[in-house]
Length: 592
Image (tube, rainbow, N blue to C red; front, side, top):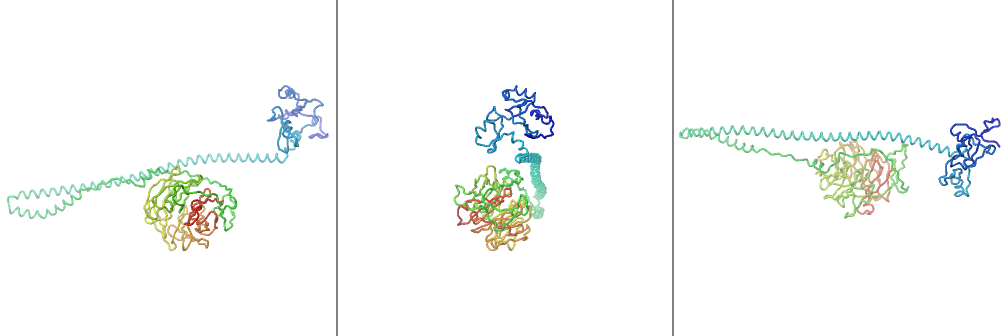
């Protein structure tokens, strides 16, 4: 029989059987024995050791011509020597293809009696060049590449972490220095004002003292002259007539002197805004995660806002733009609390962070903080009826009370608690507002009011198309804003902060404009307030992209907000006769 690895021209040495344990160590020793139990050829040294070891002392050894004539090729792995995990005195020597399992003889008899079983030594040679082995090697190679990539990313992340930590500490200290510099400057200005007031009062007192001294000398001089002429009637008469004119002047000077001697007493009055900030303990800022995360959603194909215009991914990038996404219904969040007297009327909503939304509930006269992750609601009751809401920073929001011409600030503390902060009076009853570069941008029915954070009017913008304004959205990092015009024109207008009209959006399907929102890439979302309501998606220059509709979840959409980080869309529905299941929930959609 032809032996694998041998040829007809093989020399005796080439046809010799070699010790397999030595071969694994790189040595070539002629075998003189064969262990049937281990299925292994042994040289004299290895055979001596094999017969001494307790584990192999009783193995069956064949020597000389009794050894099998067929040898394993050099490329063949060493015979199996792994001890069976189930049978400690047996070696793993068999393979069951049906179950893709290896085991000892006992395993095969007990668990694979009816299976086709191969000896590992008969099939292992071919395995090395087989598809499965090659796939495993490729997968391991890929794993090594992956772990190397992860290692590089971890090293980069460690560097970024240290840089972020250093920069964050630096930024906090820099901001603290700015605040301290501001306070020092404010203190210097206040002390200078007090010193200036003191100097003015000192000069006034000095002038009054000089006047008092001069008038006093005049009075004594007159008194002396009159006393000297007391026994001389003619001279007394003349002197008295001459003094009479002076007395009127002295009387006037005395009257003025008495009046001016009362110096105004002044005191230092604390700024109510600064005092409120101190009491409410507003943090210096917030730690914001700048990492963009992919959000996967497993909603069924039918649960999404259907696009009326097919939009394909033209970029070929993993990160789609908002306009290239469709909105799939995700869930709804119940915002009605047990102590609400009425069904909710969510006039406005604004995203504070991916896990928090602030809403105004007009029917129940309160603001509510919605925890998106836990689907819980924190409530704060109000004296006035709220309308619009805007986020100043992650710890501060502003709410409008147009009927009372007021804007109230609220702080958001740990534990989702809402606390009152400053309240400011405004010139007009602003309905909806936005915050832009430390300014309040509010709308009345026919104007846009730009105010300082203390409510002082900076500029009022008006335009012939500014009629029945319903909402406002400011474009981040720009001097542009959008307003929604309802009832007659049903349009969206884009203006700059000088009141110039930049662009206009009109559409036959846009029946009644309500909520507005601008996303991270400048896409504008517009609520179409109708029974079969939808969300219009338009470009920054007011061109229609598509219309998002889902009549099962959207009816009379009144307000909308969007999370640029998670690509989640939140919609509030309201109309007097609308079903309660729409009025008392926020509908959540996932864009992807």
